[in-house]
Amino acid sequence: MKPIEKIKISKDLLFFLAYTIIVLLPNYFSHSLLSLLDNAFLIFGFCFLFLKRYKPSKSILLITSFYVYLIIITFINGTDTANVHIITSNAKIIFYLANLDYFLKNKQRSTINILFYFITFVVLLDFVILLLYPNGWYFTENVYNEWTTTYVPQWLLGNKNNHTLWYILAIYLSCIRCIGENKKRHWFISLFLMIVSLVAMLLLKSTTSIVVVFIVGIGVFFWLFRKKSFKWIPNIYILLVCYLVLLILILCGITYFLSPIVEGIFGKDLTFTSRTIIWGRVFEQIQISPLFGSGQFSDEYTSSILESLAFVNAHNQYLQILWQTGIIGLLIYVLFIFNITSGIKRETNNNLKFLKLVIFFALLLKFIFEVEISLNCWMVFLLLAQRFNAMAKIPFKEKGGKSEKCKKLIFNLERQY
Image 1 (tube, one colour):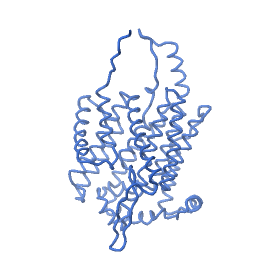
Image 2: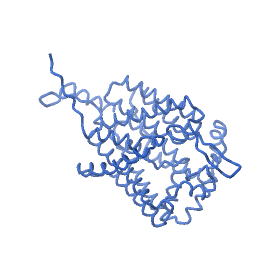
Image 3: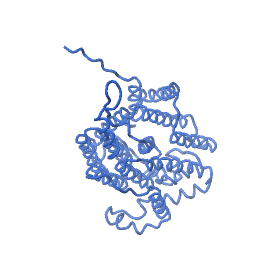
């Protein structure tokens, strides 16, 4: 009878699992105990990095610089959010991302698995709720005046614009797990999550989310059903120039070329659900302090400035950053974006580079119409810039040295991935 083998459980990974659950748990589960644990893990996360002598990557340094500047300019301008909460809330984002960066570098496979299982569980739970309550699981009340009140439908992950990044994260993590694994099982999971995401966006009826997830879905479809490796991938910097031209045209109101899609397919007007009106008001606010920015405001104060309870931000990533942090903050953010693009460009696996490009530009398209300065968004970017060589299970001889099977596997991974 063989002796029972002892199961080794990494304390570091248990810590990261608990950290991930506490930090990423949807706001629907808000509770005083969870808030206490969230604050505790801020301290634990700092201590962990200190004990491990963590050296931050360029991405983490740029994210930290962005948030530090946002906090400083908010206190200088004395906005209604200039208090301890803005420091702790942004510090939580920074330290979790730093811990994620550490684990991706040192325990890549296990880290991806932890993220995948938790995020997929939340996404599938949200999808079931969407199927059962397509018109809203619960509602939040917006009182315009004594005669007018609207009720905004909410689900597990919030309103209809808050679901996209969760679903994209689940899809991308499932695709990453295909590297060096049993392709059939993970191939099926990736396909299933792609279909689930498309159905979910259609149920939510958010035009931006539908377009973004549809683009990601096309990329994943080609990635899953490819018969040969992609021989040619467009230059990412040329694509960025094209994106910049599109962004400028839309912000300047030159949108007639989008009429067949916006008006013809989705039945929307070319104000993009009154976004162009809000952009005009945001431009006025940016002119107050274009270089340094005005700092962060509360949702209530932002709505009063924009003269609409339906809008709590600029509904454009770059206008929001310009408004809050000015040209200085925007430059920091642009440096971060270029750091991610350089990481994608260095990817030697054309198949994976193609998938990364699709997800990256789908997110950039979302930024034209939505604001996503959130933890999930930073996570997607960090994962896009990451190399996944450590995901492959490579067998070694017990006494050292590579076996023939190992050499063949390395050769196939270099050729295919």
